[in-house]
Structures are given as structure tokens and as C-alpha cells.
Image (cartoon, rainbow, N blue to C red; front, side):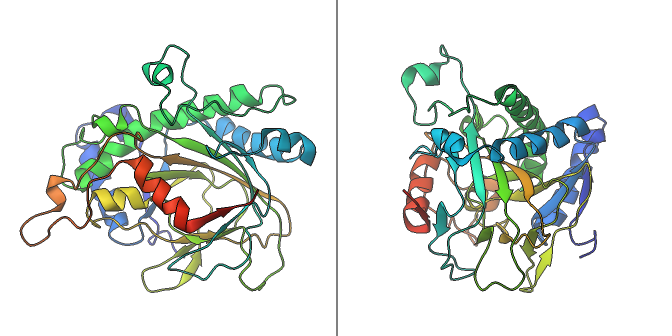
Length: 323
């Protein structure tokens, strides 16, 4: 795969507020979304030591004894540790997945203060994170990375707004992103032998949220399904972050941007760690088709919905989480 297939968007002028920078970057994002719906960002403001550090934190968490990790095992709130084989995507339009995924994950979400209105109201997305007790600095380092990516999102969302024909502030100022509902996933992939039938670190799928910002770490493993049906390995660009779109944004924009399928197969012969930041909307705010993405000849294809109802329906038919 050439870099022409997955574009690189330079965020330095955008972050600096240079005149015309948003429009230029938005045009590059639109071109990416019209082809593969993946793009890299560089000069994004997240220090290299933080990019490397969160990969190290993922490795440090997963290196704990299994009994320690199981103390923070994932619950119905999808927070905490999900061990290898902990899930299978039962249904997929891209592949008939029959074997449990070999990856392990640690999930966490935005940690609101006790006096935050959503926390006081007991909203469904305000469950407490399950933090490991015996990893000094883990919580602080993970939260620092979370906050850095959360800040980066505010520079990326306007590029999607513009590329979809809306004003630059449409997504950032939408009630559904006030605040957004992101979650962080620290992944470990065990090595596997080549050509193992239907065995994946993560099976072929599209993400469910609006956008994903992926730190691939130092090792290959991610494959992307191109529009022509070919699976290709994602390039490795040190210091870059990889952005892709999810199905909720696809729904919101009336299929103007696809949610590109991808998978992970770790054939490197060693453990692989990556960290994904999934950007979803608030669970309680109903969204409907963007005005710029519908018209007399292109009516809205989807009913208005909120993220809570949407994700509950998808998880019910898609995922099998092991007890």
C-alpha cells in the first residue's frame, strides 16, 4: 500500500489557526473519506514520549498476572479488562467469524468529577472506571493520554464538519458532543501462526462510534479492506496517528462517509500493543441526518436515534461477551 492510498493530513497549520488551514485539511479529509476513510495525522500535538508511554502502559497492564487483571474484569458497562477469547463478533457482513478473538483489552472512559451534573444524575455513561491497584502511575498516565486525545478531537471534528458541507463548529458545538463520550482501549495481541483459518486478534469489522484515533505502536498487524475488496496492511508511520470513521457518523451523514472494515492479525512473532481512542456522542442526545447530507433526491435513510439505543441494538446482535 502506498501513502497515496492512506493520506497524511498535517495538523500543524490547523492547530496554529493559520488562515485557510481548516479548509485545506478538510479537503484532504474529504478526499480520504471518498476513498478508504482512513487517514494519518501528523504534527498533532501529542508528544512522542506520550505516544510511546501509553504503549508501554498497555504492555505493563497486560504483563500482570492473570489473577490481578481479573480483579478489574469487564462488566456490562464495558469497562475494565477483557481477557483473550473474551468476545466474538457473531455477525459480520465482511466475514463469518466463528472463533473467539485472541486479543486482550483494557477499557476506560472519561472520569467525571463527583460534582459533574451527569455524575450527579447517574447517567448511563458515568460508571466508575476499574483501575488496577498495583500499577503505580498507570491511572495518571492513562488519564493524561486520554485528555491529550480528547483535546486533539476538537481539531479533527471541524475537518469532518466542513467536509460534510456543514459549518466548522457543527460537530464541536452539537449537543451530542457536549461533552463527547469517548473511551480508550489498551490492546494486546498474542502472536499467531500465518494462515490460521478464521482466527483473528480482532475479526473483520467496522467501528461503531463516530471516529477512532489509533496509536498503532511499533508493530504491524492492522489490515484495511479497500473498496475493491482487497485486504492490505496499514502502513507504519512513527509519530503519526491513524484516524478512521465509524458507523454512527456514517448513519449521521446518510452514508456520505463509509465506515471502512478492518481487522488485526498479529504475525510478527511477538506481542503487539496498540491503543485506540473511540469518539462517540453523548448517549442521551438524539441525532438525525445532517441537513447537508439529505435532499429531495437523497432522503434520510435512517431514523433519528441516540447512541445508547444504537449501541445497545448493535451489541445485542453483534457481540458475544464471555462470562
